[in-house]
Image 1 (cartoon, helix red, strand yellow):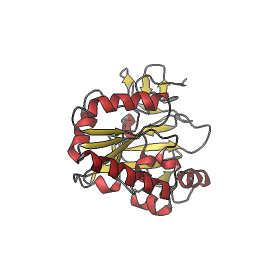
Image 2: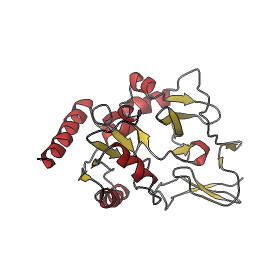
Image 3: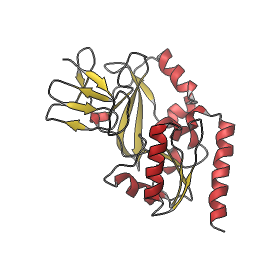
Image 4: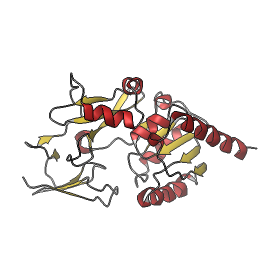
Length: 246
């Protein structure tokens, strides 16, 4: 089976779109065109299941380096049930849960020659990834919105955070509906690149109609920052929204 990894115009993934003989599928956002079965290209091309892949009994040095480089400690791995699935995927598995329901999972490549970078359970990414403090469905004063799960985990230690698992809100309004369930104060912290800033503009416009919005631009993603710096950033964000209420 011949497969080419291409940019996806629907989610701005650089290599998430896979072109098959009878179908086109994006493993980053779930876009699919054709009636072919969704498959991940591996040596033997296996289906990507909806259920969580089996956990490996041994660790991978590459996986541990990637996790710890992004500040995901052993404690955070346990807290969010992040683990390695060696066969057939050889990826770090990041489940997304809300109100004790599995919304889906992502599998992150751990080797340089693996493509695409992310795959999604059953080819469909979760609507949102929630930090631990939001997983029971409670309302909060302020919620931060970031692009990826690891940034949500890191910032979520200091401020309730959700990840869009992309750079834009979905056009159907499902993510918007979920967001306004938890707060009406939103801090947008998208990546400091073209896709991230274009997405931030779209998010600010849409959320600005239903609540207070702070668009925070930073050279670093939350997962790239030290805990002390994240704590300070979270405090400043809370202070900004408190001042708006005066």
